[in-house]
Image (cartoon, rainbow, N blue to C red; front, side, top):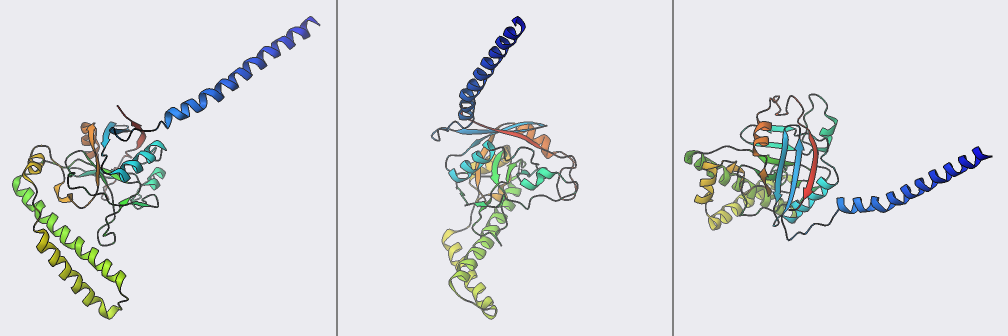
Amino acid sequence: RSSRRAGAKYTLILNTILMRTIWLSLLIGPLFAACADKPLDMSKPVYVTVSTAMGDVTVELYGDTPLHRDNFIRLCRSGAYDGVLFHRVIEGFVVQGGDPDSRKREPGVLYGGNDGGYTVPAEIRSGHFNKRGALIDAKAGDETNPERASAGTQFCFVQGRRMTDEELDEAEKQINEIRRNWLFHLFKKRLSGRSTTVAAEEGELESRAWRMVEDTLSLLGRYRIPEERREVYRTIGGAPHLDGSLTVFGEVVDGFDVIDRMARVETDPSDRPVHDLVIRSTKVFQK
C-alpha cells in the first residue's frame, strides 16, 4: 500500500510539472513569435544581415523605395532565402542570388530563371546609383520588360570597380544608348496596346515609336553623370552603366570585404560558383 501511495504521489507530481510546462509554453510561445514578427517603425532605418559561409553582409534599406523594401523584409523574415544560392558571380560587377529553384543545388544547372512567380513595380530614383555596395534588383531585359519591373525574389550586391574618366565617358554613352532603346521598347508596347495592328503594319508602328523616342530625347537632352557621382565612381567604384535602368533599394553598411571574397570565387562559364555559395540565413532589425 505504501508503495502504491508513493507511486500515486509521484505520478501526481509529474502531472503537475507537465501541466505547468504546457501552460508555460503556451504563454511564452506566442511571446517569442511576437518578438520575431515585431512591427517595424518605418520612420526609422531598417537593416538586413545576410549570412553566408564567407561572412555576413549587412545592408540598410532605403525608405523611398517602399515596395522593394517591404518585399525584401517579408522574404527575409519568412526564411525565403535560407539555403538559396548566390547563383551568378562576376568579379568587378555583381554578386546575384535569390532564385528559389537554386535551393535544389543541382550540379551544372543554370539558375536565375525563377523570380518567385511575381514582380515588383520599378522604383527608380534619381538620387540612388550603382556605387560599390549598392543593393539592386534583378530583372528581365527592356525588350520584354520595358516597365522595368523587378524579379520578385532576386537581388544583387554591386561590387563594381573604380573607373577612370575615360571609362566613365564610355559609361555615359552606354547609359544614353540603353535609355534610347528602352524608350523605343516602351513606346512600341504602348502603341501596340492602343491598336490592332497586323504584321504588315509592324514597320509603321516601329517608325512611330522611333519618332516618339527622338522627340522625347530632344526634350530630355543627353544624360551626363554628375561630377559628384563621378568622384564616387573614381574613388570607391561601382557599375555606372546601370544607372537609371533598374531599382537601387539599399546599400551595404558592413561586409564589403565579404562581397569582395564572394566575387573572387571560381565560377563556371555561366558565372555560377564552382563551389556553392549558400545564403545561410537573413535577419531583419532596427537599431
